[in-house]
Amino acid sequence: MTLIIYNTLSRKKEEFVPLVPGRVHMYVCGPTVYDHAHLGHAKTYVSFDVIVRYLRYSGYQVRYVQNITDVGHILDTGEDRILKGAARERIEPMEVVERYARSYFEDMAALGALPPDISPRASAHIPEQIEMINVLLAKGHAYEVNGSVYFDVHSYPEYGKLSGRQVEEQAEGARVALAVREEKRSPEDFALWKRAEPEHILRWPSPWGWGYPGWHVECSAMSTKYLGPTFDIHGGGIDNIFPHNECEIAQSEAATGQPYARYWLLGGTLTVDGVKMSKSLGNFTTIKDALKRYKPEALRFFILSGHYRNPIDYSDAALEAASKGWERLAAPALAVRERLRSPSAGADSNSDVANLVTETRRRCLEALDDDFNAPVAIAALFDFSRSVNTLLSAETQPGQAALEAIDGLYREIGGQVLGIVPEQAASGASAEREAGLIRLLIELRAEARQHKDFALADSIRERARKLGVVLEDSKDGTTWKIT
Ligand SMILES: [Zn+2]
Image (cartoon, rainbow, N blue to C red; front, side):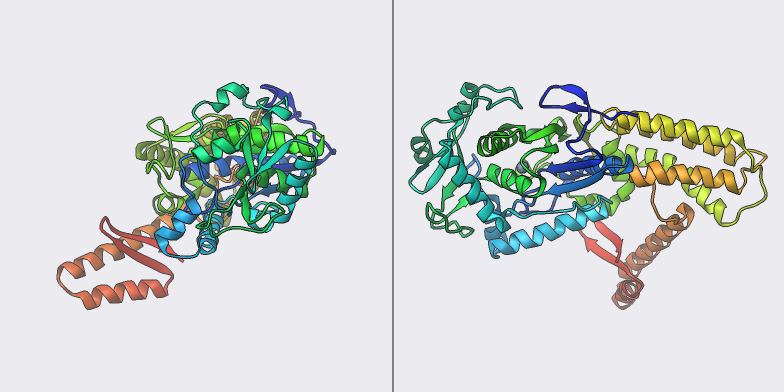
């Protein structure tokens, strides 16, 4: 079958043909690590996780690079989020970066996102960025003023080809400090290197004095280093299309003289009441908090129930509904595994089951080959689960071979590709029983405290901790997690 991808660069669906047959070089813009990641990050990176998983499932050898932005950047609002985080927590900027890079990797692992093959850090690639800026200066695409270097947007006529914006429009609304505005030849020129102000702790020596690289140049330098000047897929969130991705293209193509990424895949944002979820707006739910209430597979299910290019509106009710939907889809898969542990004699040569499995696989692959259409694949799995329920409640039970074929499809599409059916053979019934027992413990402990028996309450918590169950108190009550 042919994989079709919507390419934002050409604004149409195209057949996917990698540069080197059988191989895919892919880059996705990673997070700036200055606080815990939220569900907006989860949407972007789970979407690309499924894209990578499906490319691998389809037989491609994928090199997946996703950067970590750990160099402070002054935003249009005048703030530098990493320095702000350091001031907030009274720690070193590099401590902020280290703490939240680890937190991000933890969250992604908890969500079942496969780790990128390379997670390059901007701070570890300063020489590569300086080198690219030097090339741009030598080729006349950049100029230096007072220790800062800017890209001359007018030197690159194709600027705007990804976002479709005109240079004149871009200047409007750009809130930049007056000093910077005066430094630049043209208001829409962007910084490749910024002179470090004295309070800027994250700074490096360069041919232009102490400073730090502009945000856009890190992605150009690191993608080129690990994937070559021209590579197959560039991904990220649609909100970074301008100026970030546009600037990446301009710098890279101006520096190398070759086309940059061939297919641009940009994911829709996660919104709350129609507004983008973001740290700065305060309308965010961290991945860690969401995982206290929902299973990782249910969160993935919520994210994948919309096409990756579309926005998803988040609310507690929407996530709750998705979680229930996920249970309906996954319960038959877990029930089948339970039966496989103690198989009974059944109708083994069930050709209906073979047809059902083949037809479901065909529908799923057809959907995923059409621009990674996960929601349509999930709909096929829903139909499959309905049929499996009917089979399991029928008078003549499916035998070992039939159960194995059903389990195989759940593992293949639900597990390996979408990551929404748990890989482990853990039974849903026993997991539920375990959760029930822990809730019972929490209730008994609360009763002990009501009776002012704090010794017993503490003892319950301590003994649970020894069994690997951590009870955490907050003003909203007690939550638990398994360590
Ligand atoms: Zn980037």
